[in-house]
Image (tube, rainbow, N blue to C red):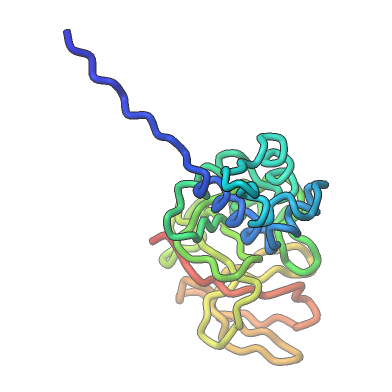
Length: 217
């Protein structure tokens, strides 16, 4: 009987360092900034430290990688994806079920993910470093979004008339609708189901509004 040997993948020096660079960029940091946040010498991940003076490759230690992952609030699974990312993007965003989005502590005052319960998901586009994803459950957002769809919400994207948006009220409610008009005093929204009437909210009742920039449909 002939046994076929399984091909073993060998990680290269360049792949590991490139993944660390992507990890830093994903956290909005330089390589030295990531090292500093991780409690390491700021020069630990500098390019000048990756090759010795006599030309030998210097690899990051497992301890330094572990500290970098903790500093970037990431995981070894995410790091593995960054190694595999040939495009240099490696972008993942926080993910939460939309039913949990209305719970206390899911977002901070500026509308960014906060607290426990968030996981991560890799998405094809996420230019905003503050972007997050929500998984739709149930049929409340039909006919536009179905059960199981994932939407990408970008707090940094400009919001215009006609955009689909996520609205968080100061009372803690979460709404997904189409923006009809926004002034200093009111916010006018059209529910995704056209059978429902337009909603008008006082601007003072709105905590924040963020644009939905992508959906997995």
